[in-house]
Image (tube, rainbow, N blue to C red; front, side, top):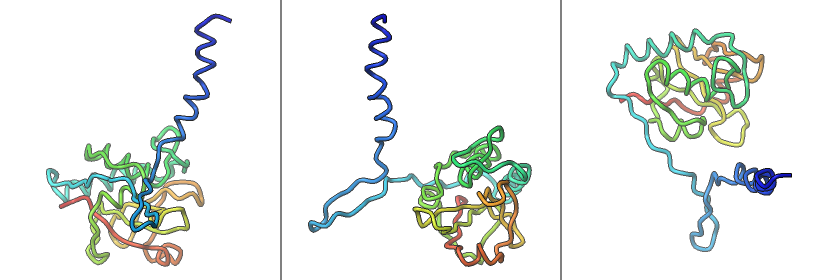
Length: 178
């Protein structure tokens, strides 16, 4: 075995260990009790795009994805999407706006709004029993409906906000628009 293969074999365990070692939370001590502090997420505010025109673009891009398969961790049309991957993809492709990757971080980067003020292009968050309060996200498309990538039934589809499953788990509306 040549020297470069030996070096590669020695490095592989360290590279693999590094992949899973990035901390998601930092533990700090406050009054001798551990407190978990989430990593900071920069706010995203859209003020350079006309709200109505941006909303229309978001809706059109998201509707073109209906029927695309669900895939955990997915973020493109060739392999499928999970809920936050779909939102991230639509905002990037429709408006050129980069969003955080997870539903939790999208909630942190956006601005909460009263659900009665929901407009097309806003985000709707749900607690579907995941490890985070914000375990599912959809894009509001108007008329009491949203589009999302659910793991159940496996494809991107629209849903009514009044659907009993989602109505019971709805935890908030947010926007990136000013």
